[in-house]
Length: 378
Ligand SMILES: *Cc1c(COP(=O)(O)O)cnc(C)c1O
Image (cartoon, rainbow, N blue to C red; front, side):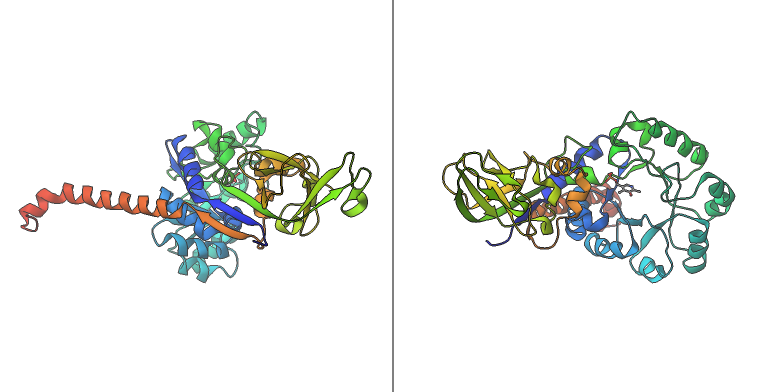
């Protein structure tokens, strides 16, 4: 083993989706933008479809292609950036549902794909995507005549449940949509956790599925194992790594492990992060390099073959905190160099096909009297 290994537990991913779904009485979709938060949109979507997800969201139409391929024709695949110039064939051929963000997009959509399903995205204060209240007031009647399948907006501060912005956006969303007979969606992971006022007809969690804050009950989805390349003894007063950032205060054993900032273990995590040898924490010492990190293994016996930097003890949010960023950024920065392993998919697929068989059996059972009448069943 010469490169680090990224293990993605699709069973834990599915469990996180089911656990979030159980917190609502409405439909739970899955956000799989940015290649499934860096974990492979195709595999992630397939696993979530097997777990029962029937609606997926991506950022751009291009991202919808892999998702459609993975989940087959049934589930809805929606696009946050809406209907951009040049998207027509992609939207049509992959049956993607654009969330229309502006009058311009609405015009483009009715001109280029008149009978193709679409949703509406409203801006309720985040000032990022969607129609603002006056724009919506002007377009509303025309847009509604075209039968949108969903009206959605997005919360700016849902990771802080007590933030007044949440209640303000909720009020504006209601004002903009209350009389309408169209399914509505406001909540991502944070909004889902804030309770039923925010659920409307559909929740759209992303980060919580992948084991990230603000869903702190999430199961760990990602594990990273990094092989040890070399171990050396370092005397008191010797330094380790670029810029002499770390100096040995005791005779130390330093191991060099095979991953670095090119693998998403960004340079800023250097301070206060441990790696794990079994249950034992060993501190990262010195600067994180492009392809290597140095760790202090003085307190453990022997030389480990590999260490873990991400596991259930140390999550993407722990790494993010050390680097003063967010778990989302750590996840989506993991990069291409890892040997990737996906676990738990077989079990999910088997469960999904046995669920499907059971529902076919139930249908046949219900239809039996009719089939008997028609002489088609014994
Ligand atoms: C990213 C995103 C989501 C999912 O957000 P999480 O915080 O990852 O749950 C939902 N809706 C929109 C519009 C988004 O951009």
